[in-house]
Image 1 (cartoon, rainbow, N blue to C red):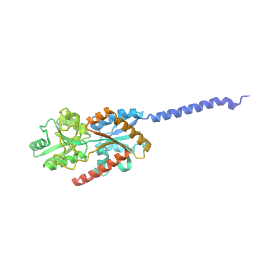
Image 2: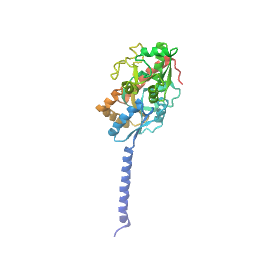
Image 3: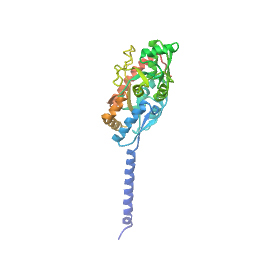
Image 4: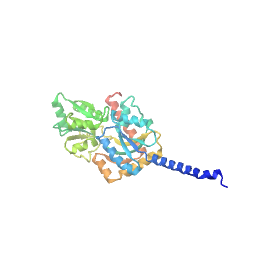
Amino acid sequence: MVSRYSLRLPVARRLVVSLAALTLAGASWAQATPIKVLVGFPPGGGTDAIARVLADRLKDQLGVPVIVDNKAGAGGQLAAQALKAAAPDGNTLFLTHDHSVSILPLVMKNPGFDPARDFVAVAGFATFVNALAVSGGTPAKSVNDYVAWVRSQGAGKGTVGVPAPASVPEFLVKVVGQKYGLDLQAAPYRGSAPMMADMLGNQIASGVASIPDFIENHKAGKIRVVAVMGSARQAVMPEVPTFAELGLAGFEDIPYYGYFAPAGTPRAVIDRFSEALARVLTQPDVRSQLTAMGLAVGHMPPEQLASRERAYAQTWARVIKASGFQAQ
């Protein structure tokens, strides 16, 4: 005799199988969740270009889409605040350079985030230098030419574009003005792309930004980089002297690029991404693309990036204090 329980058994088994299938589907969906990489500057700039080169290869290493999400404004402050608000699950990261993480907390009373408390270093991948460039509408081919040209334009007054307010480029503008007795005023932009557009249109005579922001137009002869930061000339433009060679010491400590995650992100997730990035950086075409942008490429594991960020912030805290700048 067949019991009612026996008649229901196939149904129960089907339910178990269905539940198992749903569980597996859920796990597959979770693993396929895209990784969003926040970038604090608009499309078309150096940081955006770098983020997209790496995102394209990281998706192959990680097996999930890696999407660049531009949250431009306030020198990366908006992107940094978005990172702080994100869930610490590894699905949201922040690709940034020194300004957003090391400098903003030094120049703002309330940036809306504390790197030491709200972020965790994931991996660094490059260092770079900032530079002074002049637009094609000026006759200057060197810093001395530029100084002479500014003096000829009217009482030594000039405007210099910078990608963000209260940034390392802005402090460099002040130091250059002081050294040469010029009244140079920084004109902050919302990233390097709009600044570069104005330089190419001769709306502004000069700008200070990173080599990745300038390199393409410098090589094309549309602008001219006349001096670089750092302790040595750059391989991508060996003809351009350092500020130290020109008698402007104190700009030898060079900035960095890296990825950060929300505090509380599991270490296993961080390590997985860092290791994937390390593999990407060994690919010759990726290295050549980044090097051509003016980057010195090298993988930094989490602890090394965190140490570099702290040291860089300490160096610039002294420079900013000496300049008399008051946090806004």
